[in-house]
Length: 223
Ligand code: DX5
Ligand code: ZN
Image (tube, rainbow, N blue to C red):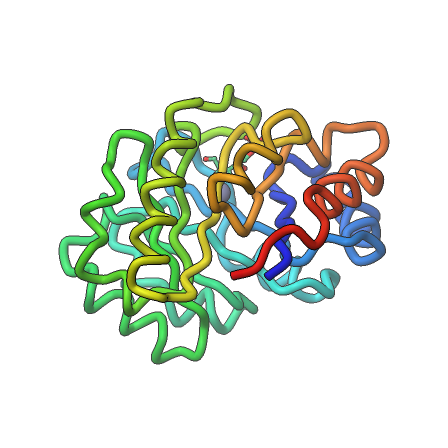
């Protein structure tokens, strides 16, 4: 399967959201990554479902909603109604992770689980079969524009081995500090969804960055 590019709207210019989304619609991006932060699970606050709904109205790409919030089970249906196609919750925020995954699936959305840089991939061993996506955080969640934590590449390799061993089709997403400088090594390690915030939206040529990320390793992967 060809990898997917998911630019993160957190790094967009919110005074120009319509223009930014017009660029995304024109681009080779596969999804739009949407970061929800609550000031509790992470130190920062981003925005809520009304903004997601507004983005959904002007963005033609599927919305990949990353919930960096405590008690995400309270809001899953609302984010689905706002237009989320993929809903990802944090392992660290879900004491009843299996139940929360089923709750996401019951809405018809694809279910993802994200893990922080300090969380080993092995904690997902007993839910992997239930998942559509695992998001490996390559920065500590809360802010865009942070430095990529290189050790997370090895987590991508380990998770990829677990997925291959069981013959599953779970997508590995990598989120934080991703750009043209590290995309290739991440794809080789097994990542299939590259989230890219600053490297896309802060670039002078975002369309070009997206299309270059999309064409890396063209036709070399079979999953
Ligand atoms: C971090 C967010 C990321 C962020 C990525 O908490 O989950 O999705 O927007 O931004 P960059 O690519 O700038 O690190
Ligand atoms: Zn994110």
